Length: 112
Length: 112
Image (spheres, rainbow over the protein chains, first blue to last red):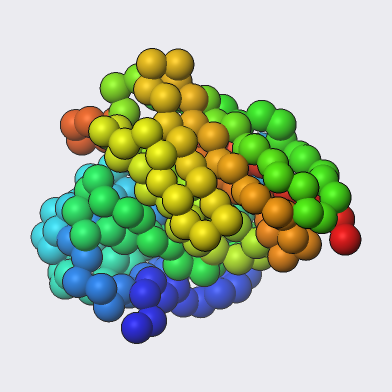
């Protein structure tokens, strides 16, 4: 049972480039979410999804897009990377919105 | 708006000591509270989930308590070991369509 899998683990982007952070879970969880973790700021919610085809914005959604075409996958797209998006990104999933959350190992992104 | 605070930000104890980590929250209308462990450069590992109807949850040497009226949760670690060294995060979830709100964590060092 792999749990929540994030790829890549590390990425360096130039300002203005786009990329997609992948997140997949094999636990048949309905609820998935993306967080960013910054020193001194803690974890902040970017976007979340309560099921396939349904997404919504979190606390810091600007500059990010998401879609949820399957239960298993919840990719996060950076449209035009900025240095302010340098962070560690975590994907999480749970059976439903208020059940125990499980996190992936994170993607460390640097935008230069 | 729910706010979660963890004090102290860092704690160092000798091996074998019993210790308590604190988590306080501003809105007592929580649905549940979850404790996580994060090792350096790694993801978050779920330790305990405590529902609003519960007063405590136990897993091995860990015991989490919840007091909604005072807005506090504690994580008790018995007979601490160097392997317990990590950052411990608590996160509160309110009723309704609200996400997990994280504290900034307590960095624990257990000295052999």
